[in-house]
Image (cartoon, rainbow, N blue to C red; front, top):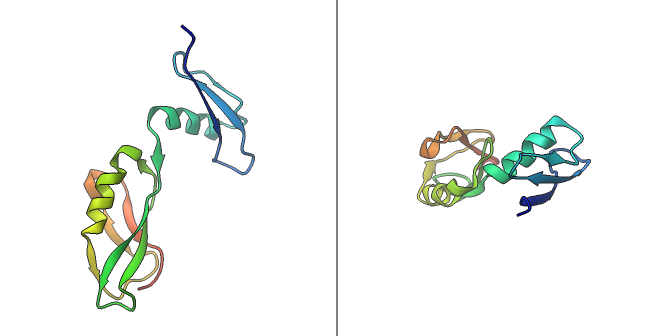
Length: 117
C-alpha cells in the first residue's frame, strides 16, 4: 500500500511553494523554508485557522463590531467558538484592538475588535 500524500500550495509567504506531505514517514517535499515545512505538517495533522466574526454591541456607535482571534485555533473548535460569539454582547464604545474575550473555550487566544463600534 502506498503512503497517503497531501498536496498543498503553501500560504506562509508570497512564494506559494507547492508542497507534498507523506503521512506514513512524515516526509515533506517542495518547501523552501522551515516555516513552510512546519505549516504543511500542521495542516495535515492539526489544521488551524484565524476566526473572524461579529458580535453585538450595546449602546455603541454601531450595533455590531467585527472581531477575530489573535492567532489561529484548531479547525475542530471553530463551530463551538462561533456559537459562543453569537451569544456574546459587549458594552459600547469599542475601540480597534480592544480585547473582547481572553482564552475562550480554554483556547490560548484572544478575541480582538478589528474596528470601532
